[in-house]
Image (cartoon, rainbow, N blue to C red; front, top):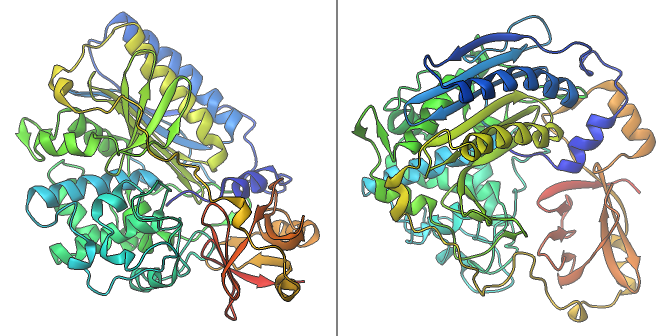
Length: 522
């Protein structure tokens, strides 16, 4: 699936450990392992160190089951499974099916490039040419639906919010068709192409376009275009197969009974389940510039397009920067200019990592049963192992990638956190008193365990609630667990926006905040 609210997951993780799903008391055991014959002593040392480090990581981060792999252009260097795939004694192995979560977006981006190669879609054609009934609301421009392209959707620059009203992280049961239809009710956060904002619904729209243009369900197109050519024999994106799979990992979210329904409507954003061996095949395919066993599946020029950073800067940091490619993140380490491509994923009791250095033909992956709070530790291990291989120069540079047009210069575009002038916000009006109060998110699909419901009822733990109130002469909203509030400005009677473009819609019987439905409780 995709990423749940980080605050929400953190709070649930910190709830008193009253269930059997709490922390383990013993280090998870190694269940199966593959190590390539003939590894150098230096690579063998990294494998041996990782074999010891991973179980401790799992113990520290409350991860009961995990599989992983280190990969180069020739295939798996080392792969292993640790712990258990369920609450019993079933081993978590390199063949255990687990959620790719938001790494699904890389599968979706790759599928689009295959469709471009076959002449089925164009990255820069407005998607209404493919789906004429598409529409969306905007405060900034007329007919925004006539401007949004696949490139905008894949680089998260369309202006679409994270989710939509029907089918989202809180209400986990909806049909894909109803989910897509509900996009017409949302409001863009900014002008099309102005800046970037991570959007699950945008990636689901990509899946919708592919379904229309290929005439096949998205899961079927992924299977025919990617999984079968890459010999990923046990990777799936359809709910029925995943739910009935005999060797599927169970989600680990101790205080919530998780619905699998997200898979169906998060088709482009988080529907894929895979195992470590299959996942490694996909990473190897990218490391070999679209080739499998010497045969070209995706021409290198399309990978070059996929890996070219957007013209918008997202997160510049002192030591590295993060850009969006087409369905992938691109991390540039500024001190050495190395580029790492891939994606993180987390949600509903699973986490995933898939990252590779194209210029060095080296990558790695993690699939875990774990809450989102464990992702930092998982990334630390994977980053450490890959960087150690590079630092010790244990793998040669892939000169085939010398021509990739990586963008390494800063641009003069608007920063990702650009905001409106707060002086334009309308001062508080007495008529807004009816809007103030406490609202609670609606839940559908996910089931909180009894003790968690009691604690939330007693203490209103974040972000189950949001509060709308007068603050310093303006109407403001504060989400549970967040220290600062966001000022609201009225666009239409009952329709408010923050300076970041987040929408509070109080016009109908079912109010929404960030496209999530609310119920006023006081």
